[in-house]
Image (cartoon, rainbow, N blue to C red; front, side, top):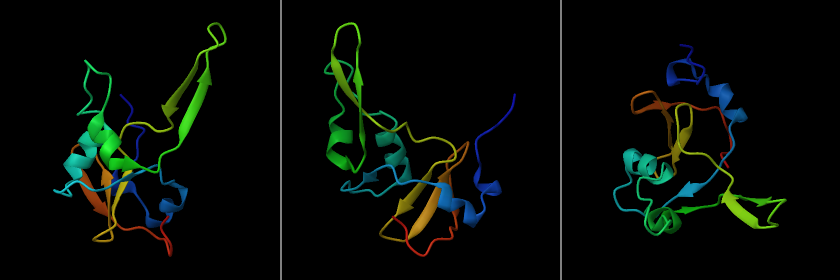
Length: 117
């Protein structure tokens, strides 16, 4: 089995320039990386209603993508983002720290950036 995702041990600070800010998660009280992981991975999605009230409450700044079904002419909008996974970086804007998602948990990393967007 090949592991193609980047892990924190192989992350170099200059690699940060290749990352793009996808969204912001704010407003929840515990400020915990595990909570961010749950929110961005659909943990609070309600199968019965088809909604994720927690995501809608705490996540902002993401782009939307529009699809047109050529047969039905139905227009569908979806979030232009994927779930939080190995190799993704989470910034804690209060502490100014960065953490990369590893195979198990998170690891704090250093980044080279004068300005973080």
